[in-house]
Amino acid sequence: MSALYPIILCGGSGSRLWPLSRESYPKQFLRVRGSVSLLQETVQRLQGLPGASAPTLVCGESSRFLVLEQLCALEMSPATVLLEPVARNTAPALTIAALQLQAQDPEALLLVSPADHVIEPSAALHQAVAQGLPLANAGHIVIFGIQPTAPETGYGYIQRGPGTTVKAFVEKPNAETAAQYVSSGEYLWNSGMCLLKASVWLSEMERLAPEILHACQAAIHGGKADGAFFRVAAEAFGSSPSQSLDYAVLERTPLTAVIPLDAQWSDVGCWAALHEVLPQDEQGNVLHGDVIAVDTHNSLIAAHSRLVAAVGVENLVIVETADAVLVTPPDRTQEVRAIVERLQAAKRPEAETHRRVYRPWGYYESLDQGERFQVKRILVKPGEALSLQHHHHRSEHWIVVRGTAQVTRGEEQFLLSENQSTYIPLGVTHRLENPGSIPLELIEVQSGSYLGEDDIVRLEDRYQRK
Image (cartoon, rainbow, N blue to C red; front, side, top):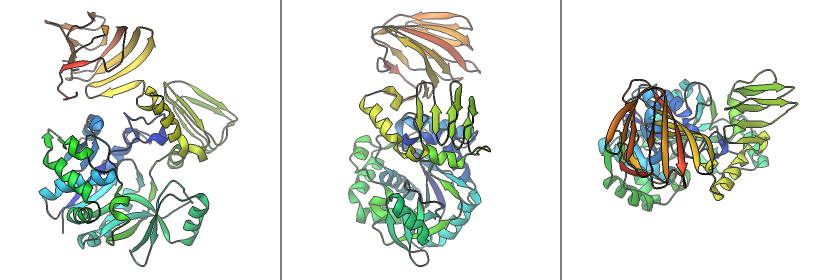
Protein backbone atom coordinates (compact mmCIF):
# COMPACT_ATOMS: atom_id res chain seq x y z
CA MET A 1 0.00 0.00 0.00
CA SER A 2 1.37 3.43 -0.97
CA ALA A 3 2.00 6.09 1.66
CA LEU A 4 -0.64 8.85 1.84
CA TYR A 5 0.43 12.47 1.46
CA PRO A 6 -2.19 15.19 2.12
CA ILE A 7 -1.86 18.26 -0.12
CA ILE A 8 -3.69 21.42 0.91
CA LEU A 9 -4.19 24.06 -1.76
CA CYS A 10 -4.21 27.45 -0.03
CA GLY A 11 -4.58 29.78 -3.00
CA GLY A 12 -7.68 31.77 -3.84
CA SER A 13 -8.89 35.14 -2.68
CA GLY A 14 -12.39 34.30 -1.43
CA SER A 15 -13.69 37.49 -2.99
CA ARG A 16 -17.36 36.55 -2.53
CA LEU A 17 -16.85 36.77 1.25
CA TRP A 18 -15.78 40.42 0.99
CA PRO A 19 -15.54 42.61 3.08
CA LEU A 20 -14.31 40.05 5.62
CA SER A 21 -12.13 38.21 3.11
CA ARG A 22 -9.50 40.37 1.41
CA GLU A 23 -6.71 39.63 -1.04
CA SER A 24 -4.07 39.92 1.70
CA TYR A 25 -6.14 37.91 4.22
CA PRO A 26 -8.42 35.52 2.27
CA LYS A 27 -11.18 33.34 3.66
CA GLN A 28 -9.06 30.23 4.38
CA PHE A 29 -7.34 32.16 7.18
CA LEU A 30 -10.59 33.49 8.72
CA ARG A 31 -12.16 32.12 11.89
CA VAL A 32 -15.70 32.19 10.55
CA ARG A 33 -16.98 29.21 12.57
CA GLY A 34 -15.32 29.49 15.96
CA SER A 35 -11.84 29.46 17.43
CA VAL A 36 -9.98 27.99 14.44
CA SER A 37 -9.74 29.08 10.82
CA LEU A 38 -10.98 27.14 7.81
CA LEU A 39 -7.36 26.21 7.04
CA GLN A 40 -6.86 24.95 10.58
CA GLU A 41 -10.08 22.91 10.34
CA THR A 42 -8.75 21.33 7.14
CA VAL A 43 -5.40 20.48 8.71
CA GLN A 44 -7.09 18.89 11.74
CA ARG A 45 -9.49 16.94 9.54
CA LEU A 46 -6.68 15.44 7.44
CA GLN A 47 -4.46 14.84 10.45
CA GLY A 48 -6.80 12.06 11.61
CA LEU A 49 -6.41 9.93 8.45
CA PRO A 50 -4.67 6.61 9.19
CA GLY A 51 -1.11 6.56 7.90
CA ALA A 52 -1.18 10.11 6.58
CA SER A 53 2.06 12.10 6.62
CA ALA A 54 2.41 15.74 7.61
CA PRO A 55 0.62 17.90 5.02
CA THR A 56 2.24 19.64 2.07
CA LEU A 57 0.75 23.10 1.54
CA VAL A 58 0.79 25.21 -1.61
CA CYS A 59 0.23 28.94 -1.15
CA GLY A 60 1.08 32.33 -2.54
CA GLU A 61 4.30 34.03 -1.48
CA SER A 62 2.43 36.73 0.46
CA SER A 63 0.53 34.14 2.56
CA ARG A 64 3.53 32.08 3.67
CA PHE A 65 3.83 33.43 7.20
CA LEU A 66 0.06 33.25 7.80
CA VAL A 67 0.21 29.55 6.89
CA LEU A 68 3.10 28.83 9.27
CA GLU A 69 1.59 30.89 12.08
CA GLN A 70 -1.74 29.06 11.86
CA LEU A 71 -0.08 25.63 11.83
CA CYS A 72 2.15 26.67 14.72
CA ALA A 73 -0.98 27.57 16.70
CA LEU A 74 -2.07 23.92 16.24
CA GLU A 75 1.42 22.78 17.33
CA MET A 76 1.92 21.21 13.92
CA SER A 77 4.66 21.43 11.31
CA PRO A 78 4.03 20.96 7.58
CA ALA A 79 6.15 18.61 5.48
CA THR A 80 6.85 21.67 3.35
CA VAL A 81 5.15 24.83 2.11
CA LEU A 82 5.49 25.32 -1.64
CA LEU A 83 5.40 29.00 -2.59
CA GLU A 84 3.72 30.16 -5.78
CA PRO A 85 5.30 33.43 -6.98
CA VAL A 86 2.14 34.12 -9.05
CA ALA A 87 -1.32 32.56 -9.05
CA ARG A 88 -1.74 29.93 -11.78
CA ASN A 89 -4.85 28.04 -10.57
CA THR A 90 -5.05 24.53 -9.16
CA ALA A 91 -3.49 22.38 -11.92
CA PRO A 92 0.00 23.94 -11.66
CA ALA A 93 -0.33 24.03 -7.86
CA LEU A 94 -0.97 20.28 -7.70
CA THR A 95 1.72 19.59 -10.29
CA ILE A 96 4.56 21.20 -8.33
CA ALA A 97 3.46 19.27 -5.22
CA ALA A 98 3.26 16.00 -7.18
CA LEU A 99 6.72 16.54 -8.67
CA GLN A 100 8.30 17.16 -5.29
CA LEU A 101 6.57 14.26 -3.56
CA GLN A 102 7.24 11.77 -6.36
CA ALA A 103 10.94 12.63 -6.12
CA GLN A 104 10.76 11.59 -2.45
CA ASP A 105 8.49 8.56 -2.97
CA PRO A 106 7.84 7.17 -6.49
CA GLU A 107 4.66 5.48 -5.20
CA ALA A 108 3.32 8.56 -3.40
CA LEU A 109 -0.46 8.65 -3.06
CA LEU A 110 -1.88 12.18 -2.88
CA LEU A 111 -5.04 13.35 -1.12
CA VAL A 112 -5.75 16.80 -2.53
CA SER A 113 -7.97 19.21 -0.61
CA PRO A 114 -8.84 22.90 -0.80
CA ALA A 115 -8.00 24.80 2.38
CA ASP A 116 -11.38 26.47 2.88
CA HIS A 117 -14.15 23.87 2.92
CA VAL A 118 -16.42 22.64 5.72
CA ILE A 119 -16.88 18.86 6.05
CA GLU A 120 -18.75 17.36 8.98
CA PRO A 121 -18.26 14.85 10.41
CA SER A 122 -14.60 14.23 9.59
CA ALA A 123 -15.24 10.49 9.92
CA ALA A 124 -17.31 10.63 6.75
CA LEU A 125 -14.30 11.87 4.79
CA HIS A 126 -12.07 9.21 6.34
CA GLN A 127 -14.59 6.53 5.32
CA ALA A 128 -14.76 7.85 1.74
CA VAL A 129 -10.95 7.95 1.51
CA ALA A 130 -10.73 4.35 2.72
CA GLN A 131 -13.26 3.38 0.04
CA GLY A 132 -11.26 5.19 -2.62
CA LEU A 133 -7.81 3.83 -1.74
CA PRO A 134 -8.04 0.59 -3.77
CA LEU A 135 -9.17 2.56 -6.83
CA ALA A 136 -6.37 5.11 -6.47
CA ASN A 137 -3.76 2.41 -5.98
CA ALA A 138 -5.06 0.76 -9.15
CA GLY A 139 -4.37 3.93 -11.15
CA HIS A 140 -7.69 5.79 -10.99
CA ILE A 141 -8.14 9.45 -10.15
CA VAL A 142 -10.75 9.32 -7.41
CA ILE A 143 -13.03 12.33 -7.04
CA PHE A 144 -15.27 12.84 -4.03
CA GLY A 145 -18.82 13.91 -4.87
CA ILE A 146 -21.38 15.36 -2.48
CA GLN A 147 -25.04 14.31 -2.54
CA PRO A 148 -26.93 17.52 -3.45
CA THR A 149 -29.36 18.86 -0.87
CA ALA A 150 -30.61 21.75 -3.03
CA PRO A 151 -30.37 22.97 -6.66
CA GLU A 152 -27.25 25.07 -6.04
CA THR A 153 -26.04 27.16 -8.97
CA GLY A 154 -22.65 27.98 -7.42
CA TYR A 155 -21.23 24.44 -7.60
CA GLY A 156 -19.95 22.23 -10.40
CA TYR A 157 -21.70 18.86 -10.82
CA ILE A 158 -20.54 15.32 -11.65
CA GLN A 159 -22.87 13.02 -13.59
CA ARG A 160 -22.50 9.46 -12.34
CA GLY A 161 -22.37 6.36 -14.47
CA PRO A 162 -22.60 2.70 -13.34
CA GLY A 163 -20.67 1.91 -10.17
CA THR A 164 -17.96 4.49 -9.62
CA THR A 165 -17.70 5.65 -13.23
CA VAL A 166 -18.05 9.28 -14.30
CA LYS A 167 -20.27 10.20 -17.24
CA ALA A 168 -19.59 13.92 -17.37
CA PHE A 169 -18.46 17.03 -15.54
CA VAL A 170 -20.88 19.95 -15.67
CA GLU A 171 -20.01 23.59 -14.96
CA LYS A 172 -22.18 25.73 -12.67
CA PRO A 173 -25.73 25.40 -14.08
CA ASN A 174 -28.65 27.83 -14.01
CA ALA A 175 -31.41 27.29 -11.44
CA GLU A 176 -33.72 25.30 -13.74
CA THR A 177 -30.95 22.96 -14.88
CA ALA A 178 -29.67 22.50 -11.31
CA ALA A 179 -33.20 21.49 -10.21
CA GLN A 180 -33.29 18.87 -12.98
CA TYR A 181 -29.91 17.53 -11.89
CA VAL A 182 -31.00 17.15 -8.28
CA SER A 183 -34.34 15.48 -9.12
CA SER A 184 -32.66 12.98 -11.48
CA GLY A 185 -30.50 11.49 -8.74
CA GLU A 186 -27.63 11.08 -11.23
CA TYR A 187 -25.58 14.08 -10.17
CA LEU A 188 -23.24 14.92 -7.29
CA TRP A 189 -21.66 18.22 -6.36
CA ASN A 190 -17.98 18.37 -7.24
CA SER A 191 -16.16 18.83 -3.92
CA GLY A 192 -12.80 19.70 -5.49
CA MET A 193 -11.13 16.91 -3.50
CA CYS A 194 -9.38 13.99 -5.16
CA LEU A 195 -7.19 10.97 -4.37
CA LEU A 196 -4.56 9.77 -6.84
CA LYS A 197 -1.00 8.63 -7.35
CA ALA A 198 1.53 11.33 -8.08
CA SER A 199 2.80 9.26 -11.00
CA VAL A 200 -0.69 9.03 -12.53
CA TRP A 201 -1.22 12.78 -12.29
CA LEU A 202 2.14 13.57 -13.89
CA SER A 203 1.58 11.02 -16.65
CA GLU A 204 -1.81 12.54 -17.50
CA MET A 205 -0.32 16.04 -17.36
CA GLU A 206 2.33 14.97 -19.87
CA ARG A 207 -0.40 13.65 -22.15
CA LEU A 208 -3.06 16.36 -21.72
CA ALA A 209 -1.31 19.52 -20.48
CA PRO A 210 2.41 19.26 -21.30
CA GLU A 211 2.97 23.04 -21.23
CA ILE A 212 1.93 23.15 -17.58
CA LEU A 213 4.01 20.10 -16.68
CA HIS A 214 7.18 21.36 -18.37
CA ALA A 215 6.86 24.81 -16.77
CA CYS A 216 6.40 23.19 -13.34
CA GLN A 217 9.35 20.84 -13.87
CA ALA A 218 11.55 23.85 -14.63
CA ALA A 219 10.12 25.70 -11.63
CA ILE A 220 10.94 22.84 -9.26
CA HIS A 221 14.38 22.26 -10.82
CA GLY A 222 15.24 25.95 -10.48
CA GLY A 223 13.70 26.31 -7.01
CA LYS A 224 15.38 26.31 -3.61
CA ALA A 225 14.54 25.41 -0.04
CA ASP A 226 14.20 28.24 2.47
CA GLY A 227 13.57 26.80 5.92
CA ALA A 228 10.04 25.40 5.97
CA PHE A 229 9.40 26.88 2.53
CA PHE A 230 10.31 25.80 -0.99
CA ARG A 231 10.49 28.66 -3.46
CA VAL A 232 9.85 27.52 -7.02
CA ALA A 233 11.59 29.44 -9.80
CA ALA A 234 9.41 32.47 -10.48
CA GLU A 235 9.99 32.93 -14.21
CA ALA A 236 9.44 29.25 -15.02
CA PHE A 237 6.30 28.96 -12.91
CA GLY A 238 4.95 32.22 -14.31
CA SER A 239 5.23 30.78 -17.83
CA SER A 240 2.71 28.04 -17.01
CA PRO A 241 -0.84 28.35 -18.38
CA SER A 242 -3.40 29.07 -15.66
CA GLN A 243 -5.83 26.12 -15.53
CA SER A 244 -7.92 24.27 -12.97
CA LEU A 245 -7.60 20.57 -12.17
CA ASP A 246 -10.91 19.92 -13.89
CA TYR A 247 -10.12 21.74 -17.12
CA ALA A 248 -6.52 20.51 -17.45
CA VAL A 249 -7.10 16.82 -16.73
CA LEU A 250 -10.22 15.61 -14.92
CA GLU A 251 -12.73 16.49 -17.64
CA ARG A 252 -10.54 14.87 -20.31
CA THR A 253 -9.12 11.71 -18.77
CA PRO A 254 -10.74 8.22 -18.79
CA LEU A 255 -9.16 7.44 -15.42
CA THR A 256 -11.67 9.24 -13.16
CA ALA A 257 -13.82 7.45 -10.60
CA VAL A 258 -16.27 9.05 -8.20
CA ILE A 259 -16.94 8.16 -4.57
CA PRO A 260 -19.95 9.72 -2.77
CA LEU A 261 -19.02 11.64 0.37
CA ASP A 262 -21.91 11.42 2.81
CA ALA A 263 -21.31 14.53 4.91
CA GLN A 264 -22.43 18.07 5.53
CA TRP A 265 -20.24 19.92 3.04
CA SER A 266 -19.83 23.50 1.92
CA ASP A 267 -17.15 25.39 0.05
CA VAL A 268 -18.25 28.47 2.03
CA GLY A 269 -18.15 30.27 -1.28
CA CYS A 270 -20.50 33.12 -0.37
CA TRP A 271 -22.34 34.67 2.58
CA ALA A 272 -25.49 32.63 1.92
CA ALA A 273 -23.44 29.43 2.18
CA LEU A 274 -21.92 30.61 5.46
CA HIS A 275 -25.41 31.36 6.81
CA GLU A 276 -26.34 27.73 6.15
CA VAL A 277 -23.40 26.19 8.03
CA LEU A 278 -23.52 28.42 11.13
CA PRO A 279 -25.93 27.90 14.07
CA GLN A 280 -29.12 29.95 13.71
CA ASP A 281 -31.35 31.36 16.43
CA GLU A 282 -35.12 30.80 16.66
CA GLN A 283 -35.73 33.52 14.06
CA GLY A 284 -33.31 31.92 11.58
CA ASN A 285 -30.68 34.59 12.19
CA VAL A 286 -26.91 34.26 12.43
CA LEU A 287 -25.71 37.17 14.59
CA HIS A 288 -22.01 37.77 15.17
CA GLY A 289 -20.39 40.51 17.23
CA ASP A 290 -22.12 43.54 18.73
CA VAL A 291 -25.53 43.17 17.06
CA ILE A 292 -28.99 44.17 18.26
CA ALA A 293 -31.75 42.72 16.09
CA VAL A 294 -35.43 43.60 16.60
CA ASP A 295 -38.16 41.86 14.59
CA THR A 296 -35.46 40.45 12.31
CA HIS A 297 -35.63 37.08 10.57
CA ASN A 298 -33.57 34.76 8.35
CA SER A 299 -30.63 37.16 8.20
CA LEU A 300 -26.88 37.05 8.70
CA ILE A 301 -25.58 40.13 10.52
CA ALA A 302 -21.89 40.35 11.43
CA ALA A 303 -20.33 43.28 13.30
CA HIS A 304 -16.56 43.44 13.61
CA SER A 305 -15.75 46.96 14.83
CA ARG A 306 -18.93 48.67 16.09
CA LEU A 307 -22.56 48.18 17.05
CA VAL A 308 -24.89 47.12 14.22
CA ALA A 309 -28.62 47.50 14.89
CA ALA A 310 -31.38 46.10 12.66
CA VAL A 311 -35.15 46.62 12.91
CA GLY A 312 -37.71 44.85 10.75
CA VAL A 313 -35.07 43.19 8.58
CA GLU A 314 -35.80 39.96 6.73
CA ASN A 315 -33.65 37.87 4.38
CA LEU A 316 -30.61 40.12 4.36
CA VAL A 317 -26.86 39.76 4.74
CA ILE A 318 -25.23 42.68 6.59
CA VAL A 319 -21.48 42.51 7.19
CA GLU A 320 -19.64 45.38 8.89
CA THR A 321 -15.87 45.83 9.14
CA ALA A 322 -13.80 48.83 10.18
CA ASP A 323 -13.67 50.23 6.65
CA ALA A 324 -16.67 48.77 4.76
CA VAL A 325 -20.28 47.59 5.09
CA LEU A 326 -21.96 45.06 2.79
CA VAL A 327 -25.76 44.80 2.44
CA THR A 328 -27.24 42.22 0.06
CA PRO A 329 -30.07 39.69 -0.15
CA PRO A 330 -28.84 36.09 0.24
CA ASP A 331 -29.70 35.14 -3.35
CA ARG A 332 -27.32 37.82 -4.67
CA THR A 333 -24.28 36.96 -2.53
CA GLN A 334 -22.61 35.16 -5.43
CA GLU A 335 -22.37 38.60 -7.07
CA VAL A 336 -20.28 40.21 -4.33
CA ARG A 337 -17.23 39.54 -6.49
CA ALA A 338 -18.46 42.38 -8.75
CA ILE A 339 -17.93 44.81 -5.87
CA VAL A 340 -14.35 43.60 -5.46
CA GLU A 341 -13.74 44.00 -9.19
CA ARG A 342 -14.93 47.61 -9.03
CA LEU A 343 -12.69 48.31 -6.05
CA GLN A 344 -9.73 46.78 -7.88
CA ALA A 345 -10.45 48.81 -11.00
CA ALA A 346 -10.50 51.97 -8.89
CA LYS A 347 -7.29 50.85 -7.12
CA ARG A 348 -8.98 51.19 -3.75
CA PRO A 349 -7.25 49.56 -0.75
CA GLU A 350 -10.48 47.95 0.48
CA ALA A 351 -10.07 45.26 -2.20
CA GLU A 352 -6.74 44.10 -0.83
CA THR A 353 -6.32 44.95 2.85
CA HIS A 354 -8.21 45.56 6.07
CA ARG A 355 -7.44 48.41 8.43
CA ARG A 356 -5.40 45.77 10.28
CA VAL A 357 -2.63 44.44 8.02
CA TYR A 358 -0.73 41.31 9.07
CA ARG A 359 3.00 41.02 8.65
CA PRO A 360 5.40 38.18 9.59
CA TRP A 361 6.51 40.22 12.64
CA GLY A 362 2.95 41.07 13.83
CA TYR A 363 0.55 43.64 12.42
CA TYR A 364 -0.22 47.31 12.01
CA GLU A 365 -3.62 48.96 12.14
CA SER A 366 -4.56 52.31 10.65
CA LEU A 367 -6.29 54.51 13.24
CA ASP A 368 -6.51 57.88 11.50
CA GLN A 369 -5.27 59.56 8.35
CA GLY A 370 -5.34 63.03 6.85
CA GLU A 371 -3.33 65.32 4.64
CA ARG A 372 0.37 64.77 5.48
CA PHE A 373 -0.23 62.59 8.55
CA GLN A 374 -1.19 59.04 9.49
CA VAL A 375 -1.61 57.31 12.87
CA LYS A 376 -1.04 53.56 13.26
CA ARG A 377 -1.15 51.03 16.06
CA ILE A 378 1.71 48.54 15.71
CA LEU A 379 2.10 45.16 17.43
CA VAL A 380 5.40 43.27 17.25
CA LYS A 381 5.46 39.67 18.44
CA PRO A 382 8.08 38.60 21.00
CA GLY A 383 11.47 38.03 19.40
CA GLU A 384 10.45 39.54 16.06
CA ALA A 385 11.77 42.60 14.21
CA LEU A 386 10.83 44.92 11.38
CA SER A 387 13.30 45.35 8.54
CA LEU A 388 16.22 47.76 8.72
CA GLN A 389 14.84 50.54 6.52
CA HIS A 390 14.53 54.20 5.70
CA HIS A 391 11.97 56.45 3.98
CA HIS A 392 12.25 59.15 1.34
CA HIS A 393 9.09 61.09 2.20
CA ARG A 394 8.14 60.69 5.86
CA SER A 395 9.34 60.95 9.42
CA GLU A 396 7.93 58.92 12.33
CA HIS A 397 7.20 59.27 16.05
CA TRP A 398 6.97 56.07 18.13
CA ILE A 399 5.23 55.94 21.54
CA VAL A 400 5.44 52.63 23.43
CA VAL A 401 2.20 51.68 25.19
CA ARG A 402 3.08 48.11 26.18
CA GLY A 403 6.26 46.03 26.35
CA THR A 404 9.83 46.98 25.50
CA ALA A 405 11.17 48.21 22.15
CA GLN A 406 14.73 47.94 20.95
CA VAL A 407 15.32 50.81 18.54
CA THR A 408 18.01 51.23 15.93
CA ARG A 409 18.22 54.87 14.76
CA GLY A 410 21.18 55.66 12.57
CA GLU A 411 24.28 54.67 14.57
CA GLU A 412 22.36 54.54 17.87
CA GLN A 413 20.74 51.53 19.60
CA PHE A 414 18.59 51.96 22.71
CA LEU A 415 15.60 50.55 24.61
CA LEU A 416 12.20 52.19 25.11
CA SER A 417 9.75 51.17 27.83
CA GLU A 418 6.07 51.91 28.37
CA ASN A 419 5.20 55.63 28.03
CA GLN A 420 8.55 56.44 26.41
CA SER A 421 8.89 57.72 22.85
CA THR A 422 11.36 58.55 20.10
CA TYR A 423 11.53 60.39 16.78
CA ILE A 424 12.82 58.97 13.47
CA PRO A 425 13.78 61.84 11.11
CA LEU A 426 13.14 61.58 7.39
CA GLY A 427 15.82 59.54 5.62
CA VAL A 428 17.41 58.07 8.78
CA THR A 429 18.00 54.30 8.82
CA HIS A 430 15.98 52.60 11.55
CA ARG A 431 14.68 49.31 12.86
CA LEU A 432 12.12 48.30 15.53
CA GLU A 433 12.57 45.04 17.48
CA ASN A 434 10.82 43.29 20.37
CA PRO A 435 13.46 41.75 22.66
CA GLY A 436 10.89 40.88 25.33
CA SER A 437 8.59 37.94 26.08
CA ILE A 438 5.30 39.86 25.71
CA PRO A 439 3.91 41.61 22.62
CA LEU A 440 5.25 45.09 21.97
CA GLU A 441 2.53 47.65 21.23
CA LEU A 442 3.16 51.21 20.15
CA ILE A 443 1.50 54.14 18.44
CA GLU A 444 3.24 55.44 15.33
CA VAL A 445 2.56 58.95 14.01
CA GLN A 446 3.81 59.47 10.47
CA SER A 447 4.14 62.88 8.85
CA GLY A 448 5.35 63.83 5.41
CA SER A 449 4.50 64.47 1.78
CA TYR A 450 3.79 60.79 0.96
CA LEU A 451 2.73 58.05 3.40
CA GLY A 452 2.27 54.96 1.17
CA GLU A 453 3.66 51.56 2.18
CA ASP A 454 5.84 51.58 -0.95
CA ASP A 455 7.99 54.34 0.60
CA ILE A 456 10.00 51.68 2.45
CA VAL A 457 13.60 51.03 1.39
CA ARG A 458 14.61 47.74 3.06
CA LEU A 459 18.32 47.32 3.74
CA GLU A 460 18.11 44.09 5.78
CA ASP A 461 15.11 41.81 6.35
CA ARG A 462 15.06 38.46 8.14
CA TYR A 463 11.86 37.53 6.20
CA GLN A 464 13.51 38.03 2.78
CA ARG A 465 10.92 40.49 1.53
CA LYS A 466 11.78 42.79 -1.33
